[in-house]
Length: 179
Image (tube, rainbow, N blue to C red; front, side, top):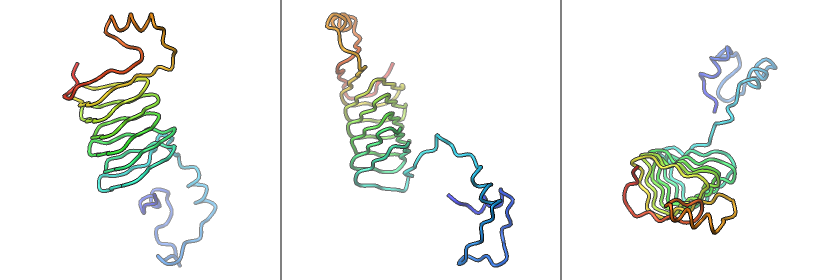
């Protein structure tokens, strides 16, 4: 996004003769080179801020930060979704990685990883390879951990006896998840 301060920081004059709000300033090769060499962060993400409400389907392939209200469906095929502390999402979520710091009502599929921070509140089923739940997070729903490896019946029986599971469903009752 262009800001007036950006022009000042590049050392370009603010008031060019003949430049007004209605007529664009001529672009010199020096200013084009300066803007082309500005570093672009590969970790930058799209943002739905606190005052924004979206009802419908959101799809994309880059990272998304939601701190507003989204209702419908979120599909980020190769991106990461972060629900901020003020974010409220009533949608089914499909993404490579999902980080929940706010509230989510709906199914969450995080292909690689799902993280529930201490301020996170989820009402819905989770499906992922890796799950991280901080102390104080609230989860009401089922958790399905999929490792992508074939399940050996003997290993599954031993895991069940030991109280651990490599794959399958784990039911979580309502309430806070604690260590």
